[in-house]
Image 1: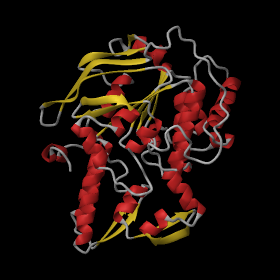
Image 2: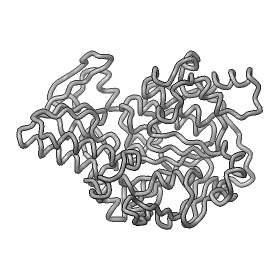
Image 3: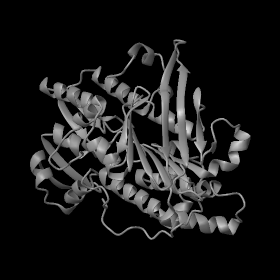
Image 4: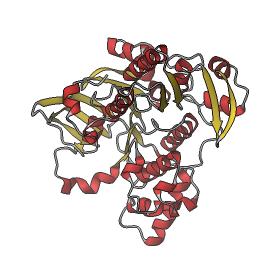
Length: 405
């Protein structure tokens, strides 16, 4: 399922999207034609259409007599592929049996908790994890016009020159606006231009054509010297937070480094503790290094760092794709609690339509660098108009335990 394989074979791993890197790893494993394939989260970074291709490939592999040991936090994938399922927690087996029996009639409370934590259309507006919302002080933002977008992309196009010296358009005439306190979800296949749009929104990449406005002021067109004082107004949470941390720094130093420069040392220490409390972490985490934290803890630290400067906009690029379903539920609930209290606008990029439907107010669907459909989450995911959107929804695994659209 790798597009332009001759070109991709000549690229380095860092030049590929997360989904393309995952497909390259799967291809390398299948090249050996093993009798037993151990698939550890094989579809985690893949969009739904490529996930469907990989699942079809794994099913074909099973029909040839190959055995599959599947490790996954995606219950829909488990339901489709596995004959027998084992539910584990803290190194112990809590429940096991035929897949349909375990997922449709779970006996252990933890299994029931996992199933309840799956985000979908039905969970929209509710909480996915046990417990009440986090007590976060409300922030009253001073804005003269609440209808004025905090972020706007106007007819942006981005072209890159590949290793073969050919120029390719990865984002083609894309326009959208993000309003205060709103969540705008962007979905599409790997390579559809989602992350490039995010990079242009963050002014980490300049558009080839078009422009980006932050609070209706020029953003992409100005130089970095003029842009730097305003960077605190837009934050980012990456798919892999570990790669964005300095492993030598303790968490407290990482958070303090993201705070405004005018704060005193005492104010910084107080603010670091406050941020950790907001994201549900103990104050002692400030003295730990990123490598000693779990994936969920690292993602919470990444969210705390992004919020350190009280941004108007938070760009979240696949922020929960690598998390197991229960930790994902906690992070999604946390994001909702933070938005309710702080009024931050989210530009939320994900290949998971369940996550998008659960969290987003509006949705953009991208294909080949262009927006092919836009509307409210219910309009786009319950009654899609474009054939590509219908194809994305049709490619979803559909277990009885989940309703996506």
